[in-house]
Length: 174
Figure 1 (cartoon, rainbow, N blue to C red):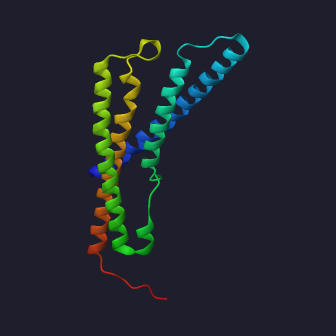
Figure 2 (cartoon, rainbow, N blue to C red):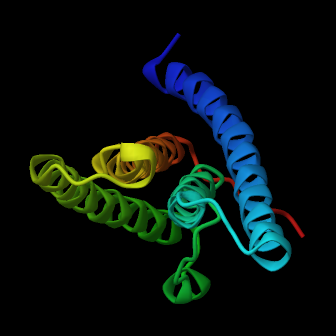
């Protein structure tokens, strides 16, 4: 079993966890927001921690959604150049795109780790006296996952280019 096969199996399991997690978090977010509205409008009260929880759930849903999009290769892309070129050149452009995406997500992972570390040193808390850095952990985790996914997609693209370069070219008969 190759490293790529192991990664594909692990990525599939991570994808399933992401789907369940985003479903649960979105449900909780909607229920808490609805409950807050009902409490405010009908009982002139609310949950002291409800709004903060909903804000962090929005962050979690957004970042997990970004990781899902990266895993399913559905992030926004600028494919102007790949429309003009075909074959190996197009594959090389896609590989460069994956490499740049991996690098950017890697830099954002580094920045997010520094940010969360700073928040941890500050000692602030959010709802229910939870340290603020705990709900913010989703930021470096998802950026690291996206970086890894793009790096492995780059490696697969290069492997495929290399495999295709070794094959003799066949002309299609019309």
